[in-house]
Image (tube, rainbow, N blue to C red; front, top):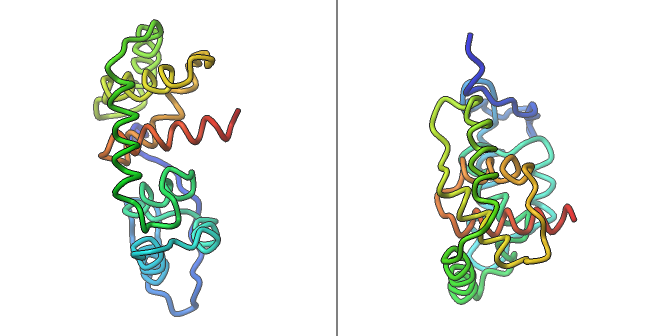
Length: 178
């Protein structure tokens, strides 16, 4: 049995004894009321309660909600959603300006992605890795590239379709780790 595409996720415990199980992927069961709680919390038009989001996330985040939850938990999206449009334009501008430049560590990034590729059945988005890590290096000239960055960026690149969101989650994660 191949383990290339298997990802382990913590067991989800029901918040209600009458919760209906819901399968999310092959190995994890989430409960409909938990998924509904995540959905209701994160689709609020004006404010996302981060304390409640942290509580819900304690035992895992359902796959379809994971990328949105990470944006809020890492601070890439603000809890106050009243000025999202202006904030999103500024974030996109920052990322697009940064990816126009080249960086010296490109070959190191490619080498690490090739090593990581052996563990995944589908091809990894090499250009996206280069853009996200290159943008971070451009905007943080004092930072030194680490091969661990490729591994830290992987969950974001595999779950988020918007590379601007990937960059800001990656940036905020690195800032929390340093």
